[in-house]
Image (cartoon, rainbow, N blue to C red; front, side, top):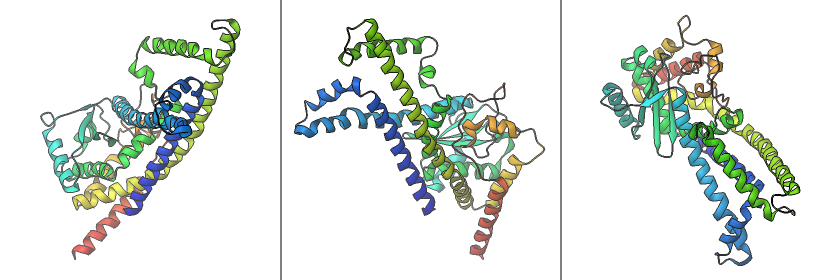
Length: 354
């Protein structure tokens, strides 16, 4: 477990470093337009020649990094829950589910997470983490397929992700790859219809006017407009290439953590419930062959959520066979390997009880 904790911490640090690189790249590309802000802050600082550098961090980089991380976690949670049509539920609607999670959370010594239920007949579950707390999502199919100790075992698995903090790390890791793939479009999601075009037009006009201090041509002239378009195109091109390059290490980090975190959550759930066989039965029931769950093709199509789920078949596929979000940052270890490791845990527990 200490090895996993170190890996999670290392992954988080590296993800934040990538986020800082993204913010710094954006700040560098927008420097011509941000210099007035930096200089205004520097004028208020009593650090002499160092004021400009300090102002750059205080006025631009640090606030942007904090806002970027916060927005990633908040947006990814909302987008992922919308993707699986999940809604938060209270104890009055699902009293048994809340009681199970409350009891298991007490045993795990963690704050009970928010609970959400996905309107899907496909049995599965996953955990999301944000700065404001965690959310465990289960499908209607899972609640129908499992009960008793098996359901407790799956919920304990998700609580292990919450306790290990890997739910937050993987939530953070899913944003940049989905953004690069075109699966996430925050502006379109928050400003449907013509709103995003209006915001884009206002930003473009502001950038055009702000370029007056950069271009040696009369504002509004043909030469000024051509110079602005060239500057804008170069900024967008370099920014796109940089985003793609910085996304690659996030994909590697997510994949490197995924297998270890699943094994650790299985082991923690088995120890928490004291019944590894219950989790084995749940895995066998939900991942067995010959049922009507999604096929391998559908599993690949639903890559946005599958890496977070208890099992990698997600919650279903879109009607056209594709998912609106495609993220390949995570993968699962084979189910038979998970079962074999759980049986080893059972042997350990049995040996200690003798």
